[in-house]
Length: 104
Image (cartoon, helix red, strand yellow):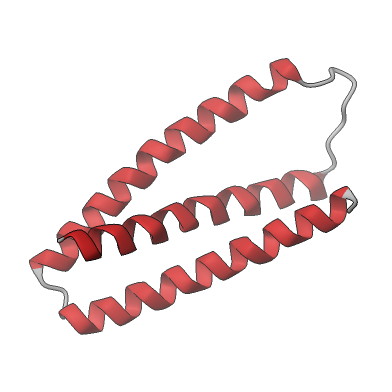
């Protein structure tokens, strides 16, 4: 597989995770009618995502030190990586929502 196919697969997975997150949030908002339990689940999930965001940002800052200094990035490639980053954050929030929903 070449690099573009791998990036496309990650972009499709990011899109799927984002759509699934929004559908799950809407479904649970109606199911729980916005009660305190649902708000607590969302707060815990957002806290977990904020921690993961911090780790991902540190990784993005440290990663260039281990890369080839002659590597160039196109705007399209940076945009693709940004969309994958957002998808990973949404996937983490989705997993945290499912976990805390089953736990509480």
